[in-house]
Length: 169
Image (cartoon, rainbow, N blue to C red):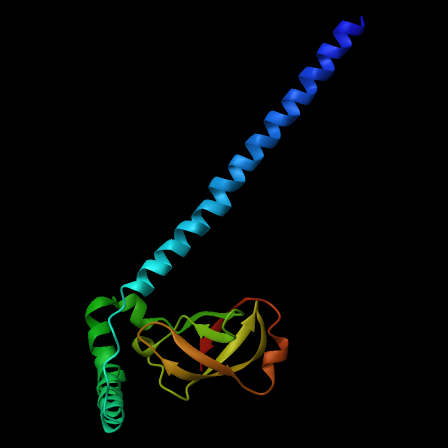
């Protein structure tokens, strides 16, 4: 009987040790190894960077100014709408209601209506939670089918959820 008990105890201890080794192996392959590979890639990227070149003080300001002008030309509302007209159908263009969601990671309010739907900077939208109107938002930056908005009349305090319905006024 004592021999049987000692065999059972030995088998139990052996299985516990095997489980511990398996857990450590899983941790290594799931956590430690990818982290080491990522660190090696970062170190190799840093090692391969070209040497810095000396730059005149006037050049960066001129380059920044030129690139700023270029970027405002590329993202003009008219160009955006003209390109979107060919991509989106009449059903999308005729929509007057959409959804508002609060991106808590970036603290931004985004609506699923845009320049294609007729929104311009300063346009206002009514915000509904179900059928109850809870406030208004104003369009800051319209893109083709989404826009960034700001809450009006203190309605930001009433936005406790993540998603709401919006209707153009």
